[in-house]
Length: 113
Image (cartoon, rainbow, N blue to C red):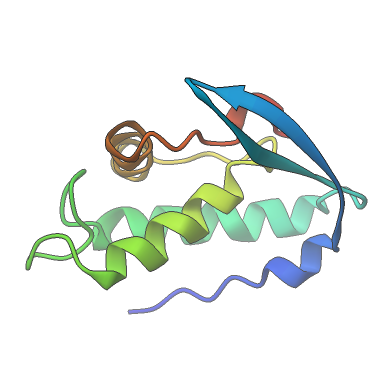
């Protein structure tokens, strides 16, 4: 199974906000000029539900342990946390939170729009 999500539907980021995270400062937010259409949110929520069954555990997406798949999958999922109203199923949320914690890289939930 595979899931295809196009981030170009959201429009181009226009402004970066510098925020402090721990001892370092990081660009963590790009404001999105267009609102996410309801049908797109519904499609994303449906795709996230499908992804729930594909994630092996909170520490890795596939049975073989941490791999390039995790770098790719986690970074794409992290980008989606900027969209307000998305419902991350429990297994997907645990996966996101695990790598945010061990990698000391914040998610965008607090800035979701």
